[in-house]
Length: 216
Image (cartoon, rainbow, N blue to C red):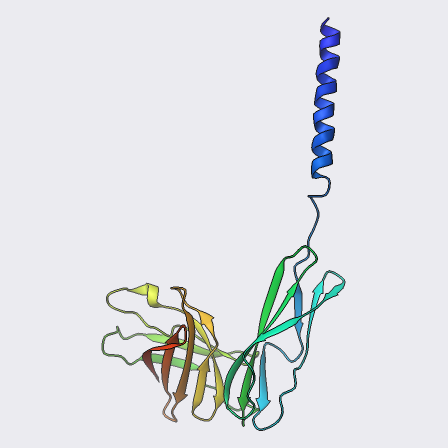
């Protein structure tokens, strides 16, 4: 009797195991997310007044090339500034991926002689005075330790590193991003010969606040 019971239990366990394997045999597998290669790099300086030609982008899923959909800003080669071009692709399993290129339309394509690096002090009456570093990167942009500054009421949560680009003499711009509070953040600005950054910051497309930083 015990032997029959043992055999019955073994048969039941085997049956359930086989069913479970059958139900999950097509679930456990690897998916490859879209992997993008940007010809010309993430930051691309374009000569103002000349027709803009897309440098090119390739999206791969493992060894298979994917179709790329382009969206974002339309580059106006007659208007200096920063434009965000977004490339998207979807893999065979329906997973999406995207990457952005930042096109800087300028009459100073070669900015190798320009260096805005240094320490900057916030110049704003309602904010605590402190310094932030600005550092030039080979990729064609600058990192800035913060753009908001320390506010006396809210403290350190207003410290937010950003990336900025040199557009041309006297003009700078913030690389578009989402800030700590979920706002789409953009900013245009000026840089004086004396090293004064002045930014007009917009949140979700609406002008919101000025920030002024003086190079020490």
